[in-house]
Length: 71
Image (cartoon, rainbow, N blue to C red; front, side, top):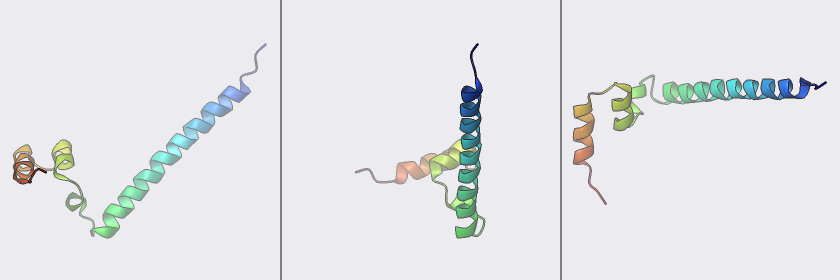
């Protein structure tokens, strides 16, 4: 007979830690975004992330990247 109590407790602890981590980071990022910029998250995001999320047209993002000097 095998006792699975320890495995169940370990899975429960990992699940709880994952939920806590996701919630904590969502609150942290949301708090930083809305307190620092007055609620305008689009000013904080880089052009690539805006294009990926669909907040900015890809043409605008590509134009900004082309204008940047390369080292």
